[in-house]
Length: 142
Image (cartoon, rainbow, N blue to C red; front, side):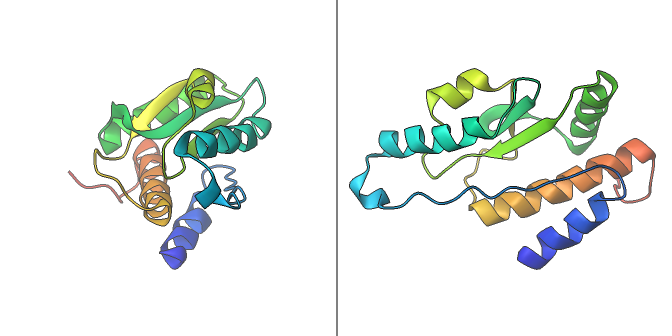
């Protein structure tokens, strides 16, 4: 999966500036309740976001978009001159309420649950696919 992620990140550099940030894993999670874990994760996440950022949570309860609709969504955000689009993958228990409150949008990749590495791979591929759709390049087939 790591090779696949790197492949799409490399391809995406032709279309956009992309930075993937892996936040540090929490320590001593066995001593924390799920709510405490979400709160601690939220503190780390919210420190990385600035007010001008447009925050999109990758959340199972988010909008379900086709690849073409996702491309249109990205294009619309680009035209509206949003400073930075920040896509966030939640921890094992999802997001703390403070992160939901800060979010501008939620997008679902699927109603199924996937590991973080799988989500990164699926999302980077969909991001690449969206840019090829926007540019009219022959990657996406219908």
